[in-house]
Length: 146
Image (cartoon, rainbow, N blue to C red; front, side):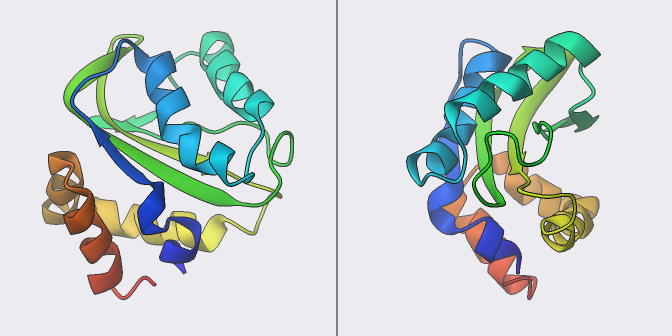
């Protein structure tokens, strides 16, 4: 199920970005390009961080940008951006941005649960931190999460 929400063409890697706002915009591009989200969803994700602080940073080097379900979201999906050099997100270094676009309050929960379980294992998280999109996708498939 996870690869339905996070297909290979939604995985990106960059050496570095200017700031966390740019990271969210780049991470969101595959979703925007496919019409999964609209530009206002990206704006809302960034606005939420300014309003609520760095609540999207869930772990060392990991952020889960998201905004209110359904507003600017045409269907549920995810996109992943990894960075070689961490970017500062209001005092937190982040190398992994997993954008979550939820169409409603429940359709994305299984995929979110699967990626959470996957990332809880340090070996798997290290593969993601390394940023090789082919290896990340193989990890998603190997985990029986397709």
